[in-house]
Length: 258
Image (tube, rainbow, N blue to C red; front, side):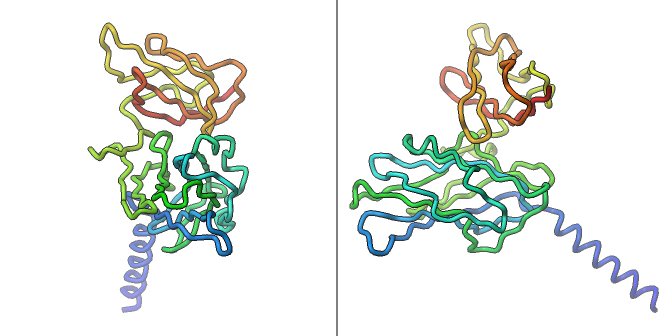
């Protein structure tokens, strides 16, 4: 009897561990807007968790219409997950973009309770009567779980509309982190082979190399199926975006080693 109890207890522990290690296939975030007390033209936009399980990293950008909103400052950062101000690229706020990057400490798996605020941003309303919308930028958007899987994102904007950002949907709003091509080798020492692109005689493909915070570092034409990265780039992680006639085909995260 005692041995059966021990076996049953062990089986329960294994089942719980397996259930925990299986991450959700999607992330759910909500953007909520609150008025700043004592002002008539300032609001705070907060990114709030609805489902955030077994996460290790993310990158996405909030975007807005600069005719309606003016970025003022980052109001709040979730210190429990180690979010820092230097993980936000504030150089693009004049364009209506605020890219942000987060990586969990030492690749630990991170869960957040429903209703947790990740970060908040303060804006000035240029047109107080407008029904402005703040949404993610679908380019260079990724959410990684602890197994390295790219997860779909359901994002509910401040007008209550929920959008699915995924390469596996026909929704008009999709992210292109994975794309339909592949790169090798990755990590690379400088030359990258682009594979599985459609090939027709008149096809021309353009590449853009971005930092993890969305800064453009280099761009040019894909030479056949190869790209030679600029020699001055230091070792690190970058985003490689491929487009055809201005239409993004996908974005890959690459690792440069020297």
